[in-house]
View 1 (cartoon, one colour):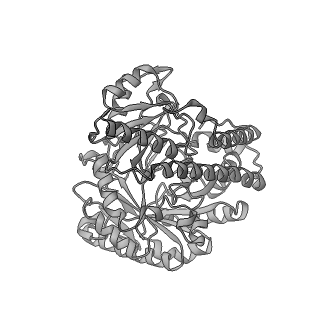
View 2: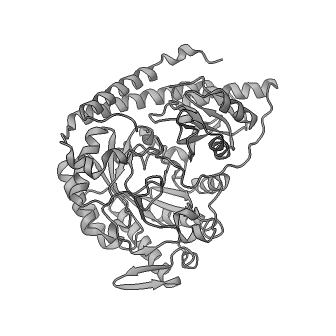
View 3: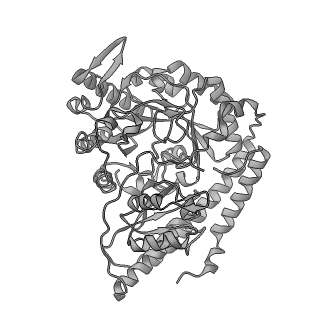
Length: 520
């Protein structure tokens, strides 16, 4: 069995240094720390040895372009772009919806000047924040003046922060030179189809050069402009991520063709996301009953495309004003009123020192994983299974089961531990008490997992998880996820070999729609 003395390892020491540094930084700012070719080895999980140096420098601390980096580095979005030039059947831009986590939702719209001060305030308080993105709530390139003025201000005041934008691509070809001129070296394009017949079912209209287009004509215009913009960006060496929304019965099978089309035009990363279509969101798809994919359907599509190009699995479908690590939202700490009252001291040296500690932790994490992988090398088994992990970030099992707002999902095999996604959930613990209704939804969200790794768990939820066939594992608290999962998997294989347990496939799981990730 796993000995408790293993907690006193190098990862714990590095984590402690990081925690101390983070708390000292937060206290200094007057802010508390409440707030996380086509082979997989060359994809968003790639490490320094897997990529050319110039690519590694662009993605090593970008949480959206590197799965490995997203455990350690934070991003923020500023909502300076309210207007949009297309209508999507899955989109409804909403304001003051603090409990909805999906694209197009914000609590405040900002001017470029307000956005610039917010970036400095966040970067001073959260030193691992390395990326600024503009993703709406409309389309950044339908608001080019506000978007590029914001980038200009950030370039001038915080040149170490990476600049990104996300666009539907309709106006993209007209702005590629400006994008390159501002050193925006990461652009995300949402591409849901390359066949206008499919696109006509997704987009009611597009607005281009003072004219509204509908139906097939609108979709044909959009896809032509998207493909041209993607080609222009990649020709300039700008990394491009393509987002695609999986809509069962409409574009789910077609996304394989989209994957091939964007790969052939030089896209670096493909992110296939589940449709969010709850009726309360007020979207066309939500109101007409269009369902989203199940967890198995989404994973099967992602797996089928992975042989073609790099796949992103760690997307959180963020709000247009998100702040913090992927999977957390600290935007409530940085409202306009609070920002305007702050005296911001942007200390670049302090940020670099903290990020150096992050890199120490990263190195320790990789070394710990390699140590366990060497012990797993002799194992022979066709078994593959999923496990869920409660984490607050840093690649550690460091969250109480009852406090988890999401669970990371990892696939384990004799090839090691592979991150395959996350599942949002409602909090189990509310006001110090467990909510049985929430527990049922959590079990449905991780029903395809054989185990759930937590820092701590109470007796009642533990018993219910066991009854549901999910093993609660709390013996690896505050240790690295991959190392711990591989250790557990070796023990699991041994139990199967000795007949202590019989391996069985799990059922499907439910992808939660609009979970309350901001709940306290």
